[in-house]
Amino acid sequence: MKAGASVDLAPPRGMRDFYPHQAGLREILFNTWSHAARCHGFERYDACIVENLSLLKRKAGEEIVDQIYAFRDKSQRELALRPEITPSLARMVCAGWNDLTFPLKWFSIGQCFRYERMSRGRKREHYQWNLDVIGAPGPAPEVELLTTALSATEELGLGPAIRVHISNRELLSDLLAYAGIPAEHHAALFLVLDKRGKLSDDAITDMLVDSGFTTEAAAKVFELFELDSLDAVRRLLGRTTAALEHSAAVFEGLTTYGWENRICFDLSVVRGLNYYTGTVFEAFDVDRRFRAVFGGGRYDHLLEHIGGRPAPAVGLGFGDVVVTEIMNEIGCAPSVPAAADTVVGYMEADQSAIALRVAHQFRRLEERVDLAMGPEKARAFFGRANHTGARYAIYIGPDDVKTGHIRRKDLEQRTETTISLRDLTGDAS
Ligand code: HAM
Image 1 (cartoon, rainbow, N blue to C red):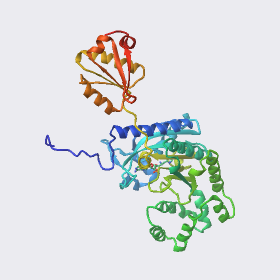
Image 2 (image 1 turned 60 degrees about the vertical axis):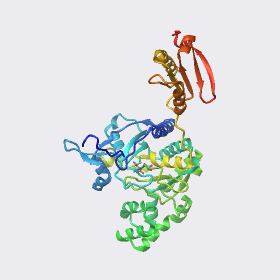
Image 3 (image 1 turned 30 degrees about the horizontal axis):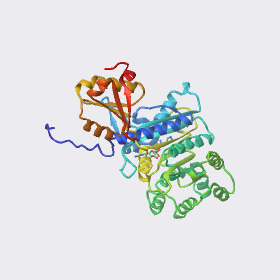
């Protein structure tokens, strides 16, 4: 490129830059996620961002290549930027099996890349908080995962704005079998039904008819979605099933935690990923104006599928994009703290050494201090200090050095405290 020719200043399509304020918000979100995970006894892990393409294909088939960033390295290895962390987690657990203690409760926060059609709430890169429990078959892992995610939404001030819609693929299978649809069609049906909300019911009916269902069978499937409680399912089936009991226990556990107003039974949640086996859930804003805030479910066969030992597993992914959109929309986005508590400046080069020692001393007292890069006029210094949002400002001039005292201004209260340089730095100059 010719020197001076302009470059495109926008990031590549679907990617984001984070200016300090946005990076600050993201840091608060990550801290909230980690705090909630640690409070609930999850251990942190991390996986590589570049993954073997064969692992992703094993999990999702050849067509995944069109939906991800896949490439060859210089040695012609087939690789991809990970679209999610679950396959890498499964790989790590299979590889480390003999050294791990089960059930394991792990969390991670990592960037994922998907070659998505861009829409509101969907980018080509996002950060995802993952919570997974591997090695526990009962309903307890679902309860622990969901209570962890819900407490993070609570901590972010979103509590009543979010509701988790919970279903169970096995239960839907029980109902489909009851409606006369043979089991071999269920997996394909789940993937079509996941498009509900994105496509009209008529379009979905057409897809079902195209794949061999009668219009009556398709209508029966839609009728099932009217069932709005586990009791209604029990009444229709006229009996209980293992999936029904499992789901009832999940609701009971979450109710014991006090989340009964934040959860609902919703058979229409099936989830697009084909590895889910039982419980599936997605969290949405109550007005359903945004895409899913988080989603997950039980994937009891994934480890075995990639060559490991069979192990029950359940997990969720919670992205940074939608939750930030909702926080901004309802005005509960946390305020990002200023970069420094105290700004230290000085009038002339002669005072630079003392300003440096003052800054150093406050930093040793655990204060966050921003030291001026050079001498400044008082007006310029205080204008800048106010702009940074710092609480305190210390401006050192020749008279302060002479008297051996500096003044620390509280920019919020508009008060001033005098501090002896001898007390602060141990000497008077
Ligand atoms: P997922 O539903 O594909 O599940 O993604 C989980 C969450 O990640 C979504 O609810 C959303 O918050 C966020 N997300 C996904 N794609 C995008 C995107 N293109 N732009 C912005 N945000 C996005 C999974 O990924 C599963 N691996 C979760 C899981 C963990 N299941 C078991 N363990």
